[in-house]
Length: 178
Image (tube, rainbow, N blue to C red; front, side, top):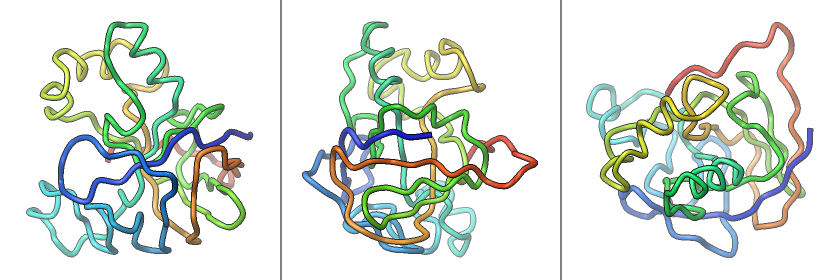
């Protein structure tokens, strides 16, 4: 399965949306350099309060452009980075890929899918009704808000970089909510 990078974004502070960039740097075991979620331990504020030494399974957030397109058709004003994703992709049904799928991006970068991004209340603060749309109004998995991943091999990622999905070994497990 092949796809491509549409856009990349970073959020240096814990805010909902991230700012588009010409490129981002991923570091193995840590995530996106300069992003608020960078580090080996959980950086999500709510989860860090519960267990600050838990491994960071949310180092990189990815959303397919096709989801953003469907939301725009539904009346939502969304662009790459708006829903907090670091990487906007095209050509891959990310939420349907199995747990531990590797995405090889560009020349060297490899990330491993760890789970579905769970829609939270902040989505409705961004745009009213968006959380419900992601939970109940989209075909496919139980909800669609992108996927989370960890960085196995670091590198630089930029728009137009190719993505190759390498499925995990069978039996394939569904991505759990994170």
